[in-house]
Length: 201
Ligand code: FES
Image 1 (cartoon, rainbow, N blue to C red):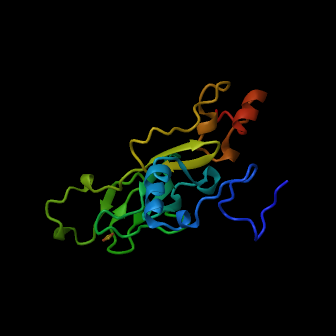
Image 2: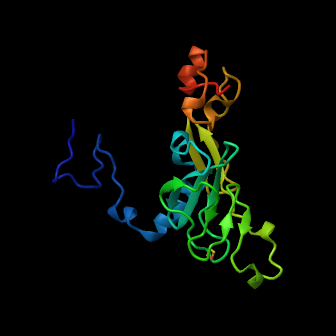
Image 3: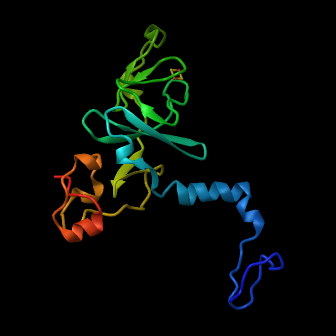
């Protein structure tokens, strides 16, 4: 069996040797841009597990190159995802993970958003005559749940998908957004194997 050593050329092509990519592939800025644009942005990226954001207002953030996304548990228990960017001057809204118990407030000039992304407050709102708050909510990002993990997809028209409903349980097992402790266990051994979790009913 061949073993890599300091003497092994990176582009060895003898039978049985893997062909290595040239080193410049890993550091070329244009290739990095293409990979982000054609591979990472259209595919689904894991942000966190649903148990990481169990309560209303709990959030986690995720950065992909220059893009930043926040996922947040709404009051109705659903999980939402938004671009982590204020609609006023584009400030980053949240960092890391934590809890926004009532609202999301921009650290720059204090614009305030509801958990569903609606703009609900602007200090000195007289300075924005004619501004329609309904047009300035946070921009949504596609989000979905699979096997208890929260995924986001930054390309709105991406054709990549996530696993569909469990064929045995019939629907929400793999897509259940509720914390695992709040679920009822699935009675189907097959479903337990496939979903690893519960029916959510
Ligand atoms: S940038 Fe957010 S309130 Fe101004």
